[in-house]
Each structure stands twice: as C-alpha cells, then as structure tokens.
Length: 383
Image 1 (cartoon, one colour):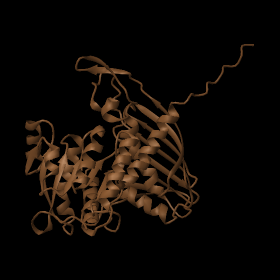
Image 2 (spheres, one colour; image 1 turned 120 degrees about the horizontal axis):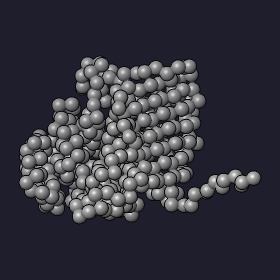
Image 3 (cartoon, helix red, strand yellow; image 1 turned 180 degrees about the horizontal axis):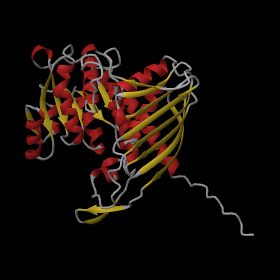
Image 4 (cartoon, helix red, strand yellow; image 1 turned 60 degrees about the vertical axis):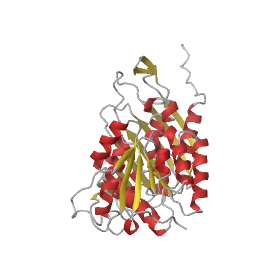
C-alpha cells in the first residue's frame, strides 16, 4: 500500500535537503508545480535542510519553505514529511536516500545517483525493498523533461528516422577554463566522486539510453585533468577529478555513440548537443536553444527546424500559447509533476534508481577504460 499523505485534503509534505544550486532549482519546481498541474496532489513546502542555520533559514524564507532545519535525520522522523528530495553533493546521496526510504518517505535524488557503484547498488537495493511497501523513488535526470528531447524520443520510437546507426553527444561548459578558479567540492573525488564525467557525462549517457531505449554494452574512454592544482583556502590544492572526458560507446541495438564532455571548453556555457542519425532521417538538438528540434523524418532530404511549443507536444499542455518558449527551470517543474503523478497513481516513476545505476556502470567503465595503457604512434624512422 502506498503511504497515505499526511496533510489536509491529501496534500504531500516535501522536504528538500540542500539549498544551493540544485536546491534552489528544485525549490522553484515545488513552488510552481501546483499552478502547472492542478490535477495532481497538492504539496506543502514543509522544510528546507542545510548545514548553516542562518543561511538555510534565509534560503527557506526566500524560496517559499515553511521552515528550515540543519538536521536531516530529524526530518525523516516527522509525520508531516512525505517526500524527501536530495540535492546535496554525491557522497551524501546514499546515506540520506537509504535512510529516507527505510523511514517510508518517497525519494528523489539528484543525478548522478551516487559516487560509487557500491553506493549505487545499495540505493537500488533499498529502493526495491521500499517499492514493495508502496514507497517510490526516482533519480533526477531533468533533461528527460525537455519537450524537444521528449519529442525526439517519440520520433525514434515511432521509427520516423529508421534504424539508429550513430549518435554524437557532447556536453560542454567553460566555468573551469581559468586556472585561477578556486577549488570546490566538485573538484574533490571524496565529495564529487568524479569530475565532469559524473556531472555532465551522466546526463549525456542517460540521454543515449532515454532516446534509444537501449542499453550501452561496450565502452572505450579517455579522461584528462588539464589543471592539476587550484587555489584552496590554505594554498594550492590538488584536483583529484577529471576536467574532460571522451568515449566511444556501442548500444544493444548496434548504434555507435561518440561522447564528449568538458568543463574547459572556452565560450561554451551550457551546451548539451545531441545528433541522432538513422537509416531514414536524423534529429539534432542544442540545449542552448532548448525549444528547437531539427528533424529530418521519413526519408526527407533536408531537416526542418521545429519550434516545440505546441499544446499537443510533450509537456506543453498547461503552459503558454504556441511560440511562448519555456526555459531550463521548467524541466524541474515537469520532473516534480511526473513524480507526483506516479506517487498518486501508485506507479514507479522514471528514471528509477536502476536507471541511475545503469548510468553509473557506464561512467565507471569509461574511467576503467581510460586507465588502460594507450598505444603510442612511433615516429617514422629517420632516413
């Protein structure tokens, strides 16, 4: 049996753990989801959790939460909390998510699922056990909720581009180009697990699985850390994660994928670019123009630019008139809506913790492949 909501009129009490970048994005989604989907169970922004009492209190007031707390464990004991949304660094995901599931709370965890395969497997085990008690869980790959990418997936499933043969997926940012950029938790393996591979590569790998509905079977990879030391609070500190990564993947359906991710790509702010080539057409997407999908369908010779804002297209009903574009933040509102719908209908939301584990296995395989010796090209002998 699904646990009964604790609030008035069947409302669900939500707690978000973390109030920085992702905590803000998720808070905005919980604040807006009721206006977008009034047909779903209403929610109460019950409590925002963070380490700094003063700062989390300010954030809670600013982001619409009823109260704040510095103790996530005490939040799990509360009867007025039904959903726990985990938005903290990766090394904390497993402990919080497992405890929340065991406490009977529905759980969302930001991507990547965990820092290690062992942690991810433990989380999947806990999710499966909780599922038998009607407790739901989901990993937050929000780009599945971009309407243009959801439409691209629909076209692939309908065979509109034929048999998919190859993909190019790149996710490029430039916020670490400056060698003087300071150390952060994202640059330490103990807190982040990996660098750009887990941060952006997890999105890229998930999109391959999502768009094709196929698993990734083989991997060949390379990773690089271009700036090995960065300014820390006590002087220079070693960077223990990757700055950029490349991989060639092959899927269960025989498609070959070229993948590249970097946080050192000068001039690229948030460029997730996807190209899918099939036997009868192609699809092209760029996150920096996220309402557009270039589609060459059903054997057409040239692609057409589609503005994905029509009410009949994925996720667009309930928003604005055609041509009034949506933004990056709307993907989190769609994510919250999908989660609430699954909980209210007693279904398992997607992507599941198992999906998160599948992505984690690919990322681990890229790292493992990158650790193998490369083949050096010998120069031509002097004549």
